[in-house]
Each structure stands twice: as structure tokens, then as C-alpha cells.
Image (cartoon, rainbow, N blue to C red; front, side, top):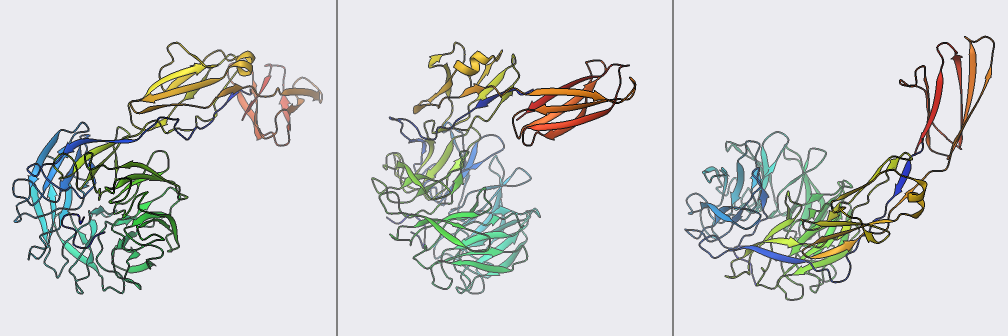
Length: 541
């Protein structure tokens, strides 16, 4: 099945010891919940991901449908209330395939692809949140044609993107456009340096943009490239089919500073790949899709709060209608959902993480009318992030905090030695009046639930530190020039603070040092008995 309009596509305190449970228990299932089923009049075949708006709603596009059949711009709430903001009529643009980009002025900016075979070769537009559309650029082949990618806001306040065709060799371009529509062509692709870029650009930490081309390069299977804001292009990767082929999607920057992306084809089974690439072009194939676990990923990856990447494949899975998957940074793939057509089919777009912590997306087909859907990904609690070490003095308090990953809202029940704690039904548990008995005997857990499953954490405890000792001796003559030498003994590696006071209210640190091998010595050379000087020592982890 060819997706619509795609011309080329396929004092030591108590220390809390915490643990991390990373897998859901039996009976957990991920699902997608269609929020909107498109039906031509309200739009059809959404090809792009959703963009969060400042009002908490999502904004997006459909490539077809609407009042004139040329696509729409829409707004949708998180519970599926859809409002059509723009009906494209060919004169003001046609067939938007890219997501919208929120500008600094609170308006959205986007592109339309244009009709195949038409002299109308696409536009750049601005649209307000209430649907007032302004065409900023009309492409004319010479300056580019048929933009399939969203715009990326640069540090200079201008937008940067690509066109699939046009330019000096009709192989596409990289361009810059101001918010009032002044267009500058930065790169003309020639096939040798890449051809037909489908994807948006990604701004790197070095101030340069990184992107992909669908075709061209040394093997004709596409490239990864770097481009400066003045148009200097560097080809970083030439795909050769073995290491992937024909990337439709843009790149995402990982927490490690590397870029991650997908290819539609190639790899060991020719169903596409997930890859990692460094800023100097070292490519690592992380996943080879095999159809059963998904096929032909056309969407970029989205980084989840759990540190994993999430995305979609257009085809494959148990029914051949595409999948939603999760992949770790070392390439462990988990198929979360196989689309069934009834709940959507053939997703071209990446997932969007909403402010409510849930993932939202679109499919270009399926749903009640076959025209695509907007969906929410429902995940059971999949992990409880590490609670972290906490400290409390004896008689003090300590707090455990649970931060589950999955689909909100969550319910909580804390347990002590397997017994529910009355009233402990929030994300945090505070234990007051820490005693040695609690540290010895108490074991704490939390059960996190949502509508799609539950997860019980591993056991956490309170542990008291070993004791420490402060000894002192004096030397010297007279009460006004006494020297006190302190020797502090305790757990090696802890941080020691020795402080002095004349009133037991205000304490002045005399020395702050690591305890090293377990002993710290310090001499107070100005000790006096009038006013009296008092000393104390504390240890922290």
C-alpha cells in the first residue's frame, strides 16, 4: 500500500537505599486509544506529528481532506475535541505533509507540499492559533520545490529547512526563511552530495544543522549531512543499503550528544534500521527491522522520560499495519503496539510527548473511515525511576519519592513490610522519627497503578551509618592561647565538618574535608575559655 501523496516513499544521617524495577509485571499491555478518526470533511491522511501549543492543545496538519480536499490545519485537545483552523484550497497552499513549528511570536509556521505535476510547488506559511493563514513563500522550482519537512527555528530567529525538489539540479535544497518570508537558498543538492531531503533539520550543540537526504550520495541510498548557517555542507554518512537506505526522518540528539535516526529501507533484512551517528560521521546500526517487529520506519525518534526512544514503523508488526516501538540507546527493541486498522494504520509520523506525560501520534490510514487517526499511546507503569539516596538524623525524617513512567494518571499505595500504610496514597512517603529499629526492621515498597496495569517496586530500606568518634587533647599555656587538637574517626570517604561556637547557637566551620582513609586531624590554635568555645563535628555521605 502506497501512502497518499508520497511520491518516493517506503552527623551521619540515615541513608535510604533505593532500587529500580525496570520491567512491568504479568498482564501488562500497551494499547493505542484513537481520539479522532478523520473522515475527509474534517481532514484526511495526517502525515505529520503533533505540535504542542502554548494553550495545552496540539496543533497539526492533514495532507488531504477538508472543505476543498487539499488538506487542513487543525487543533485538538488531549481528549479528542478537533477544531479545523484552515482548509487549504490550492491557491493558499495544498497538501501539507510536515508538522507545524511554534514561533517565538506564538504563531505556528509550516510548509505545504503542493500538487504532484502542478506548477504550484509548495509554500511556507504562518498561521495563528485561531486559524488566520498568511502565505510567506511560494516556491518556484528555482528556489526549491515541494517541501516535505517542518521548519526548524535557528538561534538567529530565522527558520531553516529543506525542499524535496527544485534548486539548480532539481534534487532539493536547504533554505533559510525569515518570519516575514525572505527566502535564502543555502544548499543545492546535486545527487553526489545527497538528493531529495524529506526531513527537517536538527540544530546541534555546535550551532550547525544536521539532517538526512532520501537519496543521493556515493551509493544513491541517501546521506547524513551537516550544514552551517551560511550553507557549507559536509556529508557525514553515505548509506549503502547494508547499513541502511533512504532515510525519510530527521535526527534527534541523544543525552550522550550523538544523533539517532531511522532509515526506511536497507539493513540486514531490508526493512529499515535504527542508527546512531556521531558528529564526525561514525555510524552504528542499532536495530535491523525484520517485518515481524516492524518495517519501514519513516518517523524520527522521540526521547522518553525513561531515557529510551519511542517511534513508529509504517508497516510490519502482527497485522502488517505498522507498529509503535521502544528502543534503548544500545539497540534493544520492544514492539509496544501493532496497529489493527481499526485503531489506525500506517503511521508516518513520530510521537509527541505531551505536558501530561503521555505520548500522542497520528496514523495516515485506518480508523473508522480509513482516513487516519489521532491517538494516545497508553502505557502501564513500566518503570519506577531510582528514588535516590536520602538522609536523616536519628529522630528526623526521610522521604521516598516515586516517579513512574507510563500513562497518567497514576494511583499509589505504599507498603511497610508488605502491609499497606494507611493514608500513604501519594507519589511520596515520609517516614518520621527515624530510629535504629526502623532501619533494622522496616522495608518499604510502593504499588503504582493506572488503567492499563500495575507495578510493585523493589524493597527500599533505611540504613544507619556506622558510629563516628571525636577526641581532643590540649597543649600550650594560659587560658587565652590554648591549642586543641581534634581527631575525627569515622567511615572512609565521608565529608567531615568541625565547627566552633561561643553560644551554642551560631556555629562557625573550622574545617571541611573528606575523611579520607577514615581519620581527620585538626588543630584549633586560638582556643579560649572566655568566652567559652564549644565544638561539634558532623559527617555526611
